[in-house]
Image (tube, rainbow, N blue to C red; front, top):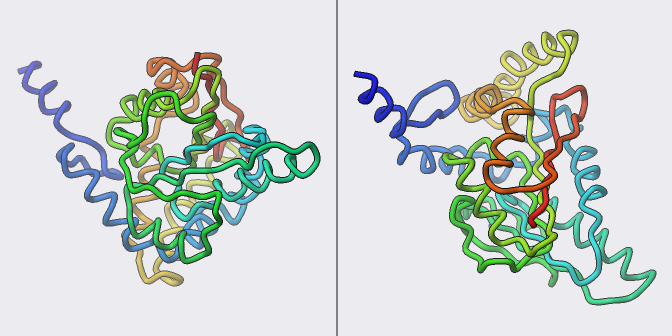
Length: 259
């Protein structure tokens, strides 16, 4: 009986608060982002109250982009984090010279990439349709990997972390920004009210899509807490794993290094 239950668990995955067949999850997530692709920035504004823009600025400050470096931005969507990376590297390059930095935006969802291309494609950005669990790049080919609000939608998170580590050069850095667990009760209650009551309604009003926003809220609750995800990163082989809470733990920046 116990063996049967273990086998069943191995073949299932969470999709928000639902339990679905593991092989079905990626397609279901893709369906959500097909629907929200044209309103991706609106989605993040609704879910974070607009603060995600400041959080992303802090991610790039921590990434410390340098001239000549290559970033892989997994689940990179419309490329907003990638654009920040090359812009910051270009500012350094203007002061001290060097080669132009570049960024590879990788996303499983073609509609998200198309939405990013429609915003204007600079020469320093490349766009690749690919799965976080099987990144379509060779070993040790990039200096930094970022993933912003994407890892919680991945079916096998440890496998994805291992593959993102695989493409990092020795000494390369990994930065993951994700919604997380508030660290005090004074934040938790209003956060729950905002998440479960306001966000789906706002999704209905502004995007005519309550269901997608309901899934996104539920997916945050199913994601491991800060220490749980740090343990996953260590299991995947990252060194010097650490995290920084943003806005009282509403989001967290997880960092690690390839050695």
